[in-house]
Length: 626
Image (cartoon, rainbow, N blue to C red; front, side):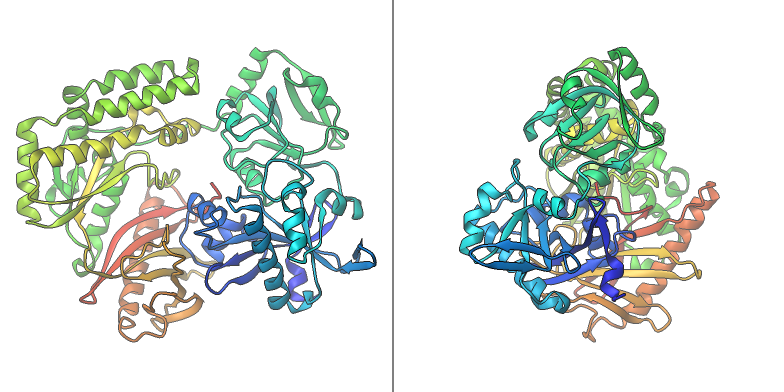
């Protein structure tokens, strides 16, 4: 067996398939085949396999956008043992085919056809065992942009041949129905015809789709009338949530028409046959209540503390925990307790005590929040959104007590005279071992010496971000008690003179060693949401030699560590400090009785003076697709 053949899986139960990603699409694109058993989807491969620090929302944007595209996820079907013959005034025999994964592309049909042609030619060039011409697989219909109606003509004009996915499946006698995530489901069988209708779907709905959605709220079950693969983002989301997911056709499962709009229970026989049972709405709701994820417990806010807490002194020993200042600030205080002070800057926190003071005395938001929490289960999504908007407006229109605000501003001006600082969200419902919450809340920059009113406005803006629709929905799904959600703020000096910024992912290996994967980019060019098709430098550190090990990618802006002597002397220091962070965070978690195999996610900066600083660290259980 050839090495590439070992990476195959059977799509639709019968078609030998490679899962692939094209990276660095706008610059020097590279085709990667990867093991679907090792990586949980395209984003996970880009994150761990290519070493790019990127969350799923950013990954989607860097796929679907024609202007910003960096990645292109797709499948290659191996037809070598069963070639597909296409008649067009003669016979064309195809030994492979490609199909794009559905990411709701914003390309015009002409641009998408040109993109597919470019991808096809790259496969031929970079995969020598597929040197002949391939065929493009399209959907027969549906709402996505790559169906036969939209792409037939522009593909033909580009000299490409195409056929429908249904034809390919018939050619291989592939299954017309497949259960991708076998779970019981109870709910109202609801047909969704447009993406916008998903806004109304709930955890008590089994949804029937004839398209692959870009986003999917928590539902009781998912049935698509278009074929999926085990690696579709819909299936990965279903597996993470423990939701039934299958694809079929109305001809294969006529019960769908029979029970449409009714409350049903879907279960499975010993032969994997699906059994439909009509039930009452009350029965479905009761069964879904039992299946809900176990509610996540978050630290209870403790407001018996000063408003401004130094994370460097004695106060940090008493108040430096997530109960007083949220997880982000508490993690920073923990870093300060053991790291070499050459590599971490002093910091402060605005505690939950200040948040409570504002919510009780400076706004009417607390009563609005408590009212929403009491009523949320009986409210429509539109009403919840309206109430959240009202809460945010109320907080932003509030005020911090004048004497408190004057004291805060005076102290910050003394600590950071005429300096740019960062005010970063630090809630009790983010950066937790069992709830990452990355990107849910807001951080803001501020230059000191501003008026009290400016400081007041920025603090309240950060506070208000606790009550966005996205943050509320994420907490709601995981059963987090919204009434306990609170916002503290981590304050530290900004890095206006950064020569490079990066993210490090650590992981304990079976042999007891720690792998250190570095993503770094020149200057202040972001890693998580890169601009202008920027590619970061990505490599593993050879910890024994204290130098660059396996290189996964090189920066297309400027080198930082790879083949650049200027900063290579920092690598042994970086490896030592990062290893210490990993060990300390894991030891702390084990002391709490948690022995899971965590990694650690670490952000760092390098200044123009060549100094290395750690900016943030948090436990990372695993990379999830959503």
